[in-house]
Amino acid sequence: MLSLAQVISVTLILFSVIDIIGSVPIVLDLRKKLGHIQSGKATLVSGVLMIAFLFFGDNLLGLFGIDVGSFAIAGSIIMFIIGMEMILGQTFFKHEPSDSAGSSIVPIAFPLIAGAGTLTTILSLKAEYDQFNILVGIIINLGFVYLVLKSSTWLGKKIGEGGISVLRKIFGIILLSIAIKLFKDNIVNL
Image 1 (spheres, helix red, strand yellow):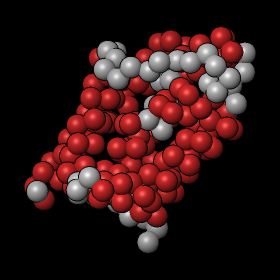
Image 2: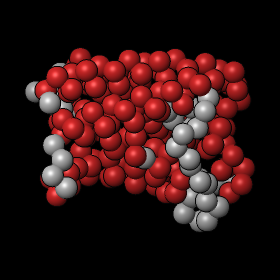
Image 3: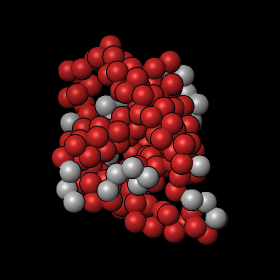
């Protein structure tokens, strides 16, 4: 049941979609405005959203009469757009920062970490990967998200603007490749 290859693939896919390294500038800006971000709370809320969508997302789709294959194709298109955002530096999906006390949840937990792209990707992954391996990949990513949120100020200084830009582009290309593969595999099944 546990497949190291699947766990690595899922972890890398989710890492690319969540793009927490690329979000360090946004997190730093929120820290500057608010003074403090609750890293644990943001990680926990985003984890609950992702895991709930992993287990109950297909039931939600069933209410609308949508099969997982069709959703996987839609998810691959969203992943493709996110990859294009990362490579081109253009923003297609707008994040509206909030300066309220709940800023650890909005916009960090949702939509920055567990946004539409992440939730769509989780459901899309169910078309090709075992659910347990996806869960392990989610948990690994949540651990990484927590570490990045906790050390975002230090990371911002060490990586620098140029380093963050290079990482975004590399993971953008990986995400584009994965999106095309997911689209190709699921379009054949329809």
